[in-house]
Image 1: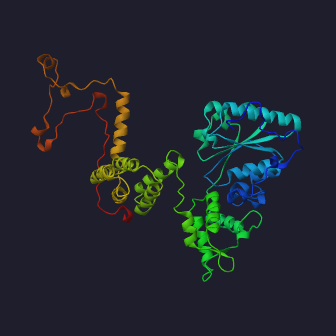
Image 2: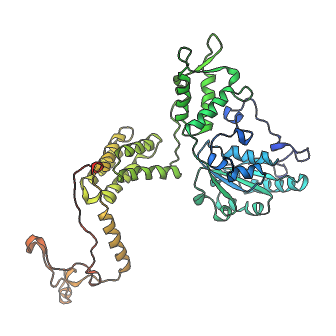
Image 3: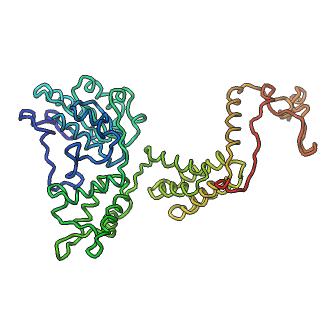
Length: 453
């Protein structure tokens, strides 16, 4: 689209009779995930919380009412498919638009073509913008007048939280629907449909579930695939296609799908992770909160999720060090020592070996007694410090290196702690206005496993 001439229309079919969904046919050599894209709501599997009987989105689609919407959900959860179904149901032109490769110039051309289509054929345009969060503020603002006057129905798809990534002006004019990661049962149903569909799916290749001698293992093979794609139907279907086409047929012409053939097609777990997106923050949040909750098992799981997905180990190490002071503190001062050592080891040796140092420190912190008294004490002291920045240092605490300063009373009545029993004096060290304040309340140390208390 970026290379299109200004005089070239995005809709060359405008002078032809209207065709549902823009008249586009899916090529037979398209990836399986594209060929198996649902054509009706009844074919759509999953997302029952928004598409179940009587649910708002289903009612809107069935009634042909076209609000501008944003679908927020993980990859392969059905965002593009739902946009297509909205356009198909209302006989609208469906225009996919990339936020990665397009700019203001392309946006204006799309708006002109959409306005012309509406004037010539009285047809509305559903503009589907994948990764809408990648548009900057000016680009997002360019859609506002066209959304408001009905020239287009804007359907955006994003894997990022719209509250942070979409302009408030645009967000106020659309309805946000949250799509969930697909369940294993949903994925298995989608895979079975692809295996048995002769027109769009793989049935003509004669796939068979399970080895010839052990057909019962076929169900395990589908479950194995469903468990290793992070809820992504697109990845699941394209992996299934690879597994089927790369499996040799037996003497009866059957291609037997097994866990081994699925594993070979997968090659590695499809990790749902974006080191700059919401998933990044969700996982580190789960990790820290599991440590705080003294759950060593959950701590190890979330740590492994991050490491296996490619998270920066130094980032994890820093958070472990922070947690040692923030949530354990003086209840177990050794926690900070171990956390710091793990951070140093991580920087020294890197992955994959550093994963064990991180795991050791994380488990230690999870099992350590917890206290946030130092954290709360500092925050209270910091609040007073900000409010009393002009408060003078008491004279008896001031340094007096010159005779003039001594004459002004600097250092007078200072009590040297080592001259007193137990090194405790009667001297007040806080400013006069804060002398009654108590920030730190002391620790109650216990060596018992917090999970057993």
